[in-house]
Image (cartoon, rainbow, N blue to C red):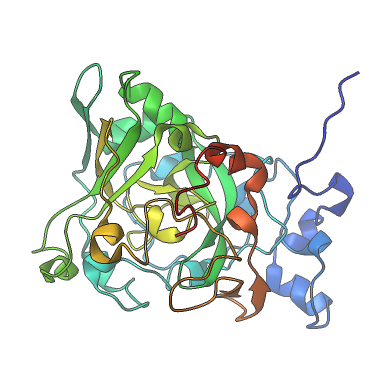
Amino acid sequence: MLIKRKRGWELPESAVTPEHIYLNRRNLMKAAGGGLLTAAGAGLIAPGFAAAQQDWGTVRGASEGDPTADLYPVTRNPAYTVDRPVTDAEFATTYNNFYEFGSHKEIWRAAQDLEIRPWTVRFDGMVEEEREIDIDQLIRAMPLEERIYRLRCVEAWSMVVPWSGFQMSHLIDYARPLSSARYVRMETFLDPDMASGQQQAWYPWPYVEGLTMDEAMNELAFMVTGMYGQPVTRQNGAPLRIHAPWKYGFKSLKSIVRITFTDERPLTFWEEVASNEYGFWANVNPEVPHRRWSQARERDIATDEMIPTQLYNGYAEFVEGLYENRQDEALFM
């Protein structure tokens, strides 16, 4: 007899919010009398409902004229959802970090200078064959789906976003790395004439991030091409970014142009800036404070509510096995 155990973050079908209630989050809050929403009604929608049916609010900086716009919305994968409300698009697309365009949180306006076409992604390093591919060709070659994931910033704020894209393992299969490759090094664009933040010479541009091959092949690692049922906005990482939801947000590199497979651990952007505060692993852990603030709680950017942070951002059942033999490393920095 096959017994399926639900993971800790999964809710029973009976707890799923009915479609007619969820379609307008504001109506749901009004129906609750302005009080606290229960987990049963806080962020789930019955599997199979299309993203286009939902009232996501205003998507600021939407990528109008994107050549892949016809692909969205995509089918939601009901295996990936959370027990919190989805953050209204107006918040998730106007409260961002994108240091290439500056260090303030309302960077979305400046990020509209990002030219997202033409755009290519290069695969090199320890691969069977180095190659470069047009972003539209790459996106159309991949099996797109929607996943609702948490995002937890190292600055102790958070959001919940319906991301569209494809599992990173599909990208790795496409790139055909050698079996001896141990890490994936990812790099963003370099164009200081377009991105004024890259004129700040004290930062080690371009922005570089990395994962182990095991992390990159984990089912949670996700290549983002869209959000809220349309192409991903510039400020959120157009036209291609990664989201590793069990890690702090700075690990999820935006606007990727190069992916290199290597047997040496990459020196990442924030490691080079301040290795005593921002390490390679950057896994979320409420018990391990940042050197300048606690990580025990986080601020929901839409409600300003302070909520408890979860180990691995609530995804421990997926990823804790990746680190069984690395207890002597700074996994949570």
